[in-house]
Amino acid sequence: MLEVQELFKSANKLSRSEKALILGFLAGNKENPFPHMGNRISIRLSENEESYTCPDGQVRQVIVETLLQMDYETGLCKKLKKVKSQEPEKTPITT
Image 1 (spheres, rainbow, N blue to C red):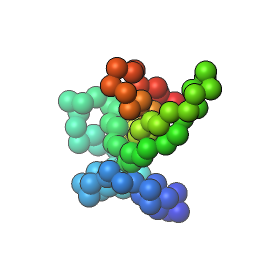
Image 2 (image 1 turned 90 degrees about the horizontal axis):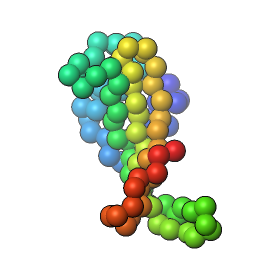
Image 3 (image 1 turned 30 degrees about the vertical axis):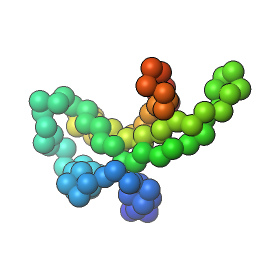
């Protein structure tokens, strides 16, 4: 239960309906409410600006999105981080 509280504590982009969907999934409800979207549903938990050190040593401001991916086929979920440059021509970096 503590892990769930930590998950929601830093979530600044989560709606009430998304929170209810996550809680249902974690409680064992494996019926996919959006089968047309496939077995994996990703919900954006948070979005923050952070400093990122590039491989060339430059430090840039990036936007870091934290997602929760729920797999209704396997019953597993995992947190993902997506790093986006604030410059529009750059490709997102997935970690």
